[in-house]
Image 1 (cartoon, one colour):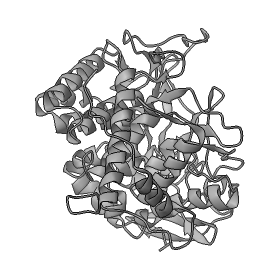
Image 2 (cartoon, rainbow, N blue to C red):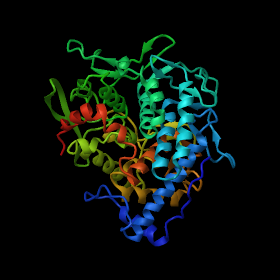
Image 3 (tube, rainbow, N blue to C red):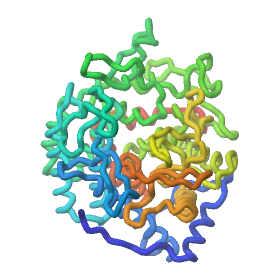
Image 4 (spheres, rainbow, N blue to C red):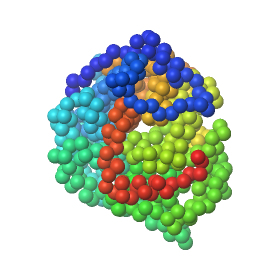
Length: 481
């Protein structure tokens, strides 16, 4: 395990300052905050030191998930003994999280360049040994051997071999960050990605049969019987749009694919609320430009109303910068919706809801149902998930930091060595025993974006992203500003 620099907690006065800065919720909520500099006030420097401590501990948890084979496992149990207990399984998303967290650690000075190169080389070497199909990685591997899982380790249930489009997007994201951060690994990464053609998941649009040919990407593909999932990823404001961006950027998906995804479903379709909007034509594609209204604010909903659907992608792709009056507005309103849902509508005293470990065991989706398209979709259930607050931090730093301090203080939810535990039931006080690689990976990326903006975004600001994705997003108009 790498040596990391420990810093002390906030002093009492500074803790009060940060809590006060984020207390309550109102329409006057201030979003965004610059990083501290040598000339900032002592309280701001102390606040930045707190965020750095949180990053270092979070990175240490991801290091504790890394196996001797070189892969980041799915999760660790941090309450079972003195040493965290690793799960056997891992996924392409988990592997990508380990990669970008390592690059972020080097960029923030937590580890040195040589340590980063060694870690990334181990990870790329492990990924090169993994079995693939159609250029993509399977959804579950044994993190200790790299073998494709055929039985679930916990109960022996069979695992069908599956190629998930969204999970593959996150390992490709990690690999592209590796190639940008460590040029010596770039040729090996390019060879790994040479066959990852996103058109494999794509169903071209056919106006004669848009239901079966919607111009969208499938959820995935089972290799045991060579069949695709019955569903496509249709909602735009969800995490699968990372796969869309990657494919559009490398030319394997047409740009019009982006315009064939749904801002909302059509008004006559069953969904959480009847949207308002209008029909428009963009790049020759006729589309319904719809929006929801929540607590008096217009926004484009996600599928389930969770934080990570809306705010994981902009950690890497600068959507808000490239589309300030659409994505830029929507991201902020998504955060404010979570804040007001938790503090005002439900009066939990805490906010931030996203799929996570159930505090008592298992896994569930959590969200703000009213800002998700799915009928009877993700609900908050009084369970707050710390990674959701970190995803909000680039848009509402003071509020997010204060919320996390309250969660840590009131529920003892912070592990002194490894960071925030995965979830908290605010009604019972039960805190999860686990930390999940996906959620810790989002925490690490979000803190990197706050402490050193753009640190993980460079690969997604150049090449096909600059040529194709940026001008595409500049045309976006949600009609909500």
